[in-house]
Length: 433
Image (cartoon, rainbow, N blue to C red; front, side, top):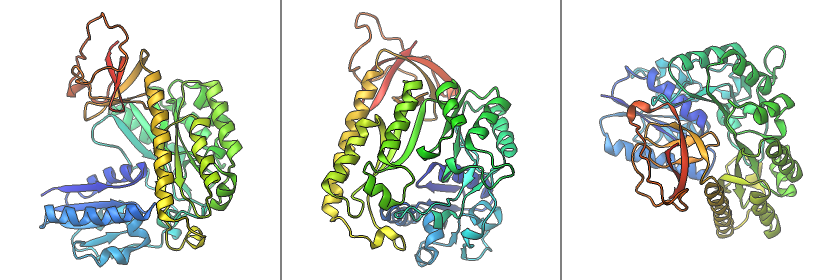
């Protein structure tokens, strides 16, 4: 008997899945589906995963949790494959996984005021750890159901975060990612109202042996001055940011109820890259938001180049019940799909140019459990440890023999310096530097 966890959605879910793996160790033959509710497609995929998992292990109990379960527990409880539905609060309680627990355990998430930083821990490959510093969201973007799955914003006291990271570094982790639902809203609910920048500064000062620190998705308008100084000037803060832009048109941003406009998004990126040119920008973009015209869509398309977005997550808009955007005039589905395709193609071109531009550079790469890795700027590397089967797109020196990498599974979680020799399948190829 074993615990299998199927994780969908954000990095916070990934961290919480690892916590659940430990909490449910003695729960018997169990499958946990940690769902996402960000789109209707995510909910559909959760249902597919539940049915597929039960077919593969018919004797196992299936527990469904995560945001989709929190928002619509009855719909999952009605599935014959499902033994229990847990809310986002209950999934971090070991008692919830016992066979004697109630079939539906979902509390009012809006009443939750605490977080569980000691539980949201890491992956088991001992390379990159995810630490929850914030949960929930006080904002109400018109397209988003997540606040109703995660509750109001609440922050983890800095001392608890520092203690957690110290323990992870002592355990051998080379990289920590601070996660949250709206991580840049960190602090107002704590004594003294500390900012995210203050938290990051304290971590770097208090844990000098931490080699690499990252942040999950950011709201660009909430990057304070202290955080900007760290992002652009601290070598241990990785040069990679993922921005929650969502659109590149001012009217659409207003109808989304976002807190920034197009000019602010562009100015933020330009300011950061002027101070730290090698920083890589990722972003979320929604295609086909209600009322979006061709010109509005074009403005979002152009944002990919104007903000040098090299890692884009593209979401075709799908109306979520009970959100204001679901009641707005909808863009026809074929047009939404076409606009999403154009955004993906533009993003792929931008990423390809970026990766090609890294050929010939030296990159410090964290080796991960699949013997692949990511550079400091989060550029992905192909499998490490042996000569790549791919053909370099532009060799550094065609006359010099390729040096294979003396790397094995024992090097997982360590950082190596590689000379980038080419690009293969959207990943960099590297040689021992």
